[in-house]
Length: 431
Ligand SMILES: [Zn+2]
Ligand SMILES: [Zn+2]
Image: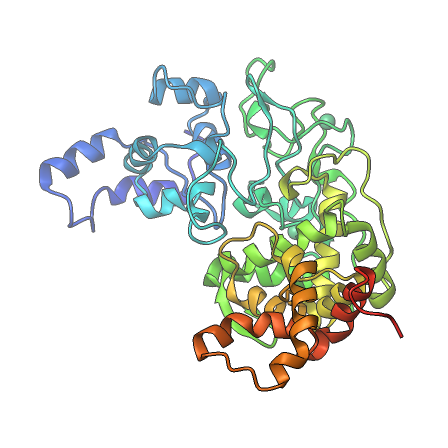
């Protein structure tokens, strides 16, 4: 019991005092089920990180601890931070003496309604980095960390926000997050730290690389970014604040729910990383904002943001950060230059968040009635007749308005386009 901290002692002594909402027998049962040592989760600590510290507090290896607590339950051959079910979390709340809300706040599922509207599709959770579960290990680099944060922790632990694809920087230390061991290049799989080490407890410390034992705290912590405002850092900071507030501010528009802000951001990302406009859009933005132009690196074939490598995520996000820094001016000017109109700007976005849709609609809408060649021919033939006083009843007039427009009678800005079209179809003579 040497790992017992003062805080744990207080917890043990506190028992069920103050839990008036549960019945007496319930309270007794709960108190019997409680673990003797119950370190509470640190602010924004990830579920798996907390479980490891709970095991370590009892001097047990992680898997021993979990199979004693939940015999037969498969925990570590999946992404438990993403997939923990409510029965498991309810049980964990009882055993750890924490509230359901506190326990749920350690899970990625608690981002539902904050970063995405609802539900995980095909096991994918929007904005959450995939870890690529393979048996009990991980193949993808879905756990990020800040070496400086880990080094400053009294007990190194992993943050929930580090699993989010748009959290690419540590706002506190102004450094990029890392996603692998700097010594051997392995993904961070901190729950495997005690495997193959007889007698080694898991969190000893949690910051050691499971593959080579290198202490991640000792790695290069990254170049401190410039002290002048950095749009990428500002965007990550705004989004992290948006996670807490559930609202994010759109310049020139006002605050919008964070998940709607992210939906629009994602659409801009799709354009910037997409095949059709991506390269030209990045080149135009590079020129406008003076950021280095870039091409997508070889290992990021999949278009979805969560599957891009860390460097590509940072590049896409940096570009979006610049576009959002003078929203909507830069975005509208670049799209207009590339002839990227509403149809492409909205893509499959349905429904589009209003803050994004309104900009696209007001500035990039180029749809107009496109008459057939026959309609144009008919209109031109009827032109004189119409102006000669031929009477159309109102309901018919409405029907004919686009055709009149097609004839160039009152088409306004589209007159030239229609004229060229008619010329190509040899309906009217050019000149
Ligand atoms: Zn940090
Ligand atoms: Zn390593």
